[in-house]
Image (cartoon, rainbow, N blue to C red):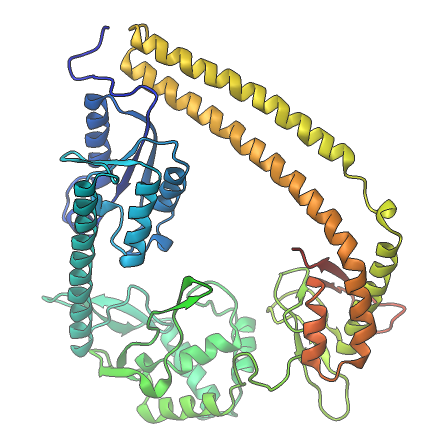
Amino acid sequence: MRFTSTWKIADPLAQYIIYLRKSRKDMEAEALGQTDTLKRHRAALLSLSESRGLNVVDIFEEVVTGDSIAVRPEVQKVLQLVETGNYAGVIVMEVERLARGDTIDQGIIAQTFKYSDTRIVTPNKTYDPNNEMDEEYFEFGLFMSRREYNTIKRRLSRGKEASLREGKWISGKTPFGWSREKLPNDKGYKLVPHPEQAPVLQQIYNWYTGEGCARIGAKAISTRLNALGVPTNSGSPWRADSVLDILRNPANAGWVKSGGRPETKRIVDGTVVVSRPRTRQEDLKLYKGLHDGLISQEQYDKAVALSYSSASPRGKGAWGTVTSLAGLIRCDQCGRVMVRRPSSGGRRDTLLCPSYGCTTVSSWYDDVEEAVLDALRGWLRELELGEAAAPDDAPMRAALESSIAADRKQLAKLEAQEARAYELVETGVYTPEIFLQRSQALAADKQVIVDRIEASQTTISDLARARQSRARLAPAVRRVLETYPLSGSPQEKNDLLKTVLQKILYHKQSKSYTKSGSDMHVTLYPLTD
């Protein structure tokens, strides 16, 4: 066989994956001028693969950093492929590149490789997860990686807290009204007033607290700023909640804060859910900043007190009850959830879209509720016509099954071509480089066909579920229509509608409120299994 002395075929049928990821140290080194880490590691691992005769069919490069598998999409893809058991191994620079998460993440990594009998290949050692010694060495490597990661996190956390105590601004983003300035002869930054936004910021406080003018609320301020064409930092329109966030920001009074949005983790249905709830104003850690406030402490305290005294209750159940359409009905123009606006003086409540500038027109709430019930009645009549009135999906099923059969024949041809490629490389007709390119191309073509077969099978299953859903939906809709008028509270009505509805799209562009002239209509989407 005509191979170079460094090329040795270990197993021409075995497929390998290369996984690359930058560490924090790599990023720090690149910031100091070193070469691209991923490019350097890719070249090293490809050279390793060639010298050992490993058939690399895919390369995954992680460009985000994080300690959890949940925030690293490329390693998730690698694990999904490893789970299939179709790959002989994963090639990495070191085992620590695979996982730095907690014991759960480490266990997922270890078990995935062990139960799929997939090796981990590094320049220094090849780990067989079903070998007792290798397994212990692999798990120890993951443990030490996690320990190092926690050490780095503690160091960074202490550094951030020290910078805050010194009054430095540590965030890469700056709040409205401010710019960031590098400290002379020192590490870090401080806030300086933004030449255009600072006067607007001061005016917002004056409007809200009534300093030298009539006091107006956050909603009126957002409307006024939008009318004046004042841009926000994000480029989105001003809203009442964005105005309140500005009013409650202690940086405007000369402070820097710590712990404003701490990351919290909890288990929900067996899955770790990460959230960043807002810290109460009185629980914030405040340090005197290196910058001077744009407003006085007295005006800031007054604005904060007013903002909380007039704020609406937040969270599920804050009002005691919900409306019957809560969380179900959305604007068909912007997708936002429609909200109910209570009226006083005996007037009817309205349903409106909360998006600034949206062209959707509001309607009386009870008119929309009745429109939803009318749509349900029409829906029930169609369902009661039976399966004969439902669209015939037999031709589509037949077409999909025919497509699957054709794809399977094509897949068999590609597998024959793959076997032929192995014969050609073994006889020396293909060079290693040509064989690698051909192997990757065939693997990619096969994956396209496999994905297409799976998509067709999924569509066939969806059609079957749709038929079953139609059969079950009629009695459920009938129960809703019979029970709805007897329900004692909006919460009960809302729960009842959610037994058959996934969402409702609301449409209205005309400002006419008369039934004859209104273009208001709703589109119902059934709850799927």
